[in-house]
Image (cartoon, rainbow, N blue to C red):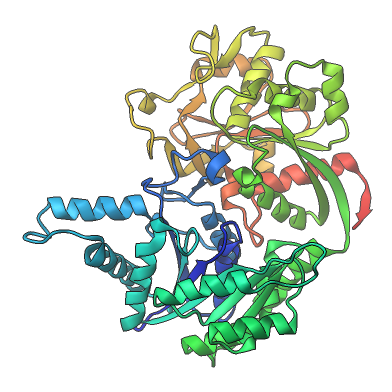
Length: 542
């Protein structure tokens, strides 16, 4: 079977949105019934993303197979409505580790192992094996970082070599700046970047341009001249209202047809119903009359919103399912510490629902518990995710059960009541990377609970990433005080979900946001938004 490859690179600067461009191309391929999957390369020497700080790298996305991968995989899954596997994530750490292991096994006997040809050959072989194993028409390859970075230079060289033997189409994402007060779109930075790319032996077939406003005709023509391309191959990616609009923006410029022709799939017809469904979703996000609610996300990493990228998108999907316009505010949890209940009420009183997402470490947890206490005592919808579930249990133990000093072993190893403790299978582990409870796990849900109503089933599978859990020694005591344990692991050893049993308030040890997609919103988010909208009880025109 012949496979095609599309390589997406970025020039000038990071953070331009290569992941969104890659996801949009994936969506186009699916709409035209071309089987495609992505590979993401990141040049850092970490084996995976598991030990990275969310402040520096953004959200760590977890896959069903326990892989801890780059946050771009979240967008891949959301646009494709398919689950990825960790073989599709390649890091510099994985590459060098695998090649060195091969050398130790004697697979390079008599040779001095070098980046070229051994790393580059290994890369090409691995990419081809993925395309073959998955029986793909097209393998999309997103190159992390920026062209010119030392850490991705050997990967770009491998892509050049791959293009010598395979059908490879290069797409480059760039930025067209415009100086305030001048009013002219500047192409010189991209010209220089393209010159560097061509010196590496790479000729992009398409250039996608991020800009503040639509590209002028003269800008396209000038850029095309220096890129050896036709002006129609310069694609406009100026500011859009939401990320899900990009596939439609690309189609408006004929990019889908040009790319399909380039790949040899020009005769493919589009899935009209699939396109119509995607357009409805995008139109809903952009305008219309909706029900309304206001949500606060109280977290410890809110200064970098990418830390909670999947939470944000899960709210969007659930809003669509509820025909609701949701206003989201981000509140730094530390700002809710050391202040009076009256001040906390003044800050949170305008919100219909509160989410406390995941995280690690002691910083800001008391502020999160203050937010949880407010939601419980003031009839606000609440959704706790992983850490948010653990803190929900601790807050209930302290303030509803009278267990003064209740805490988590993670935050206080001398706590009188360790409501949250280290999982048994974590106690002997010394390493950090890849050692938590990871991946998709089943949960048994009790009938008659809010969780059961949300899922419509007594069984569910959600993705996890944690090493602390609800301490079973306190299960009966908290239940006797009124806490509802609505979800447990099938072996009955792990508390997976808890509820207040009064108004809507659910905490889950899992991260349901990781499986939420436009076509399949996360059930708990969907139920949470419904409860928040009910609390608001208003109609809102956007």
